[in-house]
Length: 126
Image (cartoon, rainbow, N blue to C red; front, top):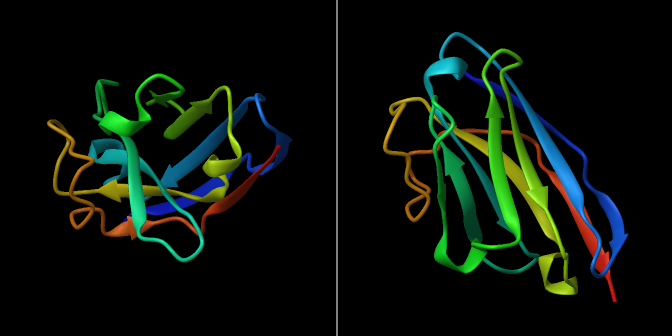
């Protein structure tokens, strides 16, 4: 079982940057695909990016360019660097783990991501 805790959300002005962190624990955390997913109030969850156990990223097409996912295996931590933030990026950001996969991580289908953190809120003002 994987436990996930996100950090780093907050309020920021448009154009600013934030780095989110997700600390993972549990016997399968180090062998799982990890992903960042967000949910705007009233809308469906949206995959941002995933990373495999070797640090190879996969991005949703709409998220390429301003978001960077990375992973520190030694710290069991996954990061999401977010640059040039816009008001439409305002959302709850979640970290999630797919313990059934270590490589070939997918971000288009969120169903394999069974373990989720509690989320961290990001609010971007214009």
